[in-house]
Length: 383
Image 1 (spheres, rainbow, N blue to C red):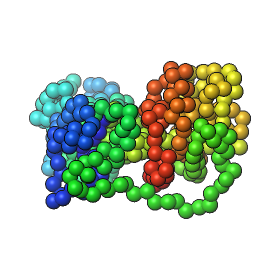
Image 2: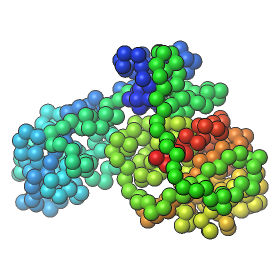
Image 3: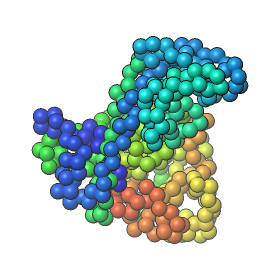
Image 4: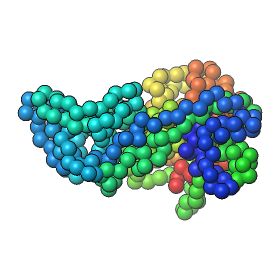
């Protein structure tokens, strides 16, 4: 389990407000019975990256795929040659490495000529900065960020330390940052600061969820969110997921993964418009009933498998993996958000039967909180 020092300490109020250093946290966790496998500082090389403002741009005179950019770094307007196709319009903000900066991996930025045109620095992608996995173009920053600001000051989670812990089967609470923060707060005599999770307004619709296998699914919350807009998550959230080894996909999917890592409880979001009758049935699968999972694999189900179905067919292998048919996409408008408790033995058997080992099954197999923790996870995601 990877734990972000920055994220962890944001969940604890310590006496004197002195944030313990990563290695101090590691010692505390060792004293609490958690095996610390390593502490890895990250993001130090990104300290010199600035917010740059596009002041002008023109085609390179000798290269069709290059653009000559006039970039304001907070102090002066510099000329930078860029090969990205997604440069923002005039006034847009980008991640800028000035001359003298050293990128992760050791690349030193110097003044140079590209096809006869001087370039004073480099406009960077998130992969070049090792803060994300999107290598399709340069990193576009929010337009209201001030030119010349350091990127690490605008996104504190960029500079961090990742603490790797080994979690024994009897500590499923340590599979989320809040559970680990509870140990830290106890050892330091501090106060745990759980994330806000306000209850939503609106009436409960009992027809939305049918639990036809109560021995395998003790609780199931289904929430409908209407007229949503699917798009990229904000940079701070994408960075937090990346630091823990998760790929940012979309705001909807990223929220479920964020809550998974924060509270240790798996969630799943369905495209409700792709659910027959817009509802779900938690039931046992039919013998040899087919389902295509999110990874594109078509599997034949067993009567021992628990599924989340719509009114017609399976849409998810409960607690293990979602289905391809009802997956959230760029055109999704209405969601059904799932938060549930599934029988650990059943999840373990299903995951092994079909050869899956997912973040979701790993936690359900060990037993997640079926009480207040389940409710908190659902409300946190909704918030």
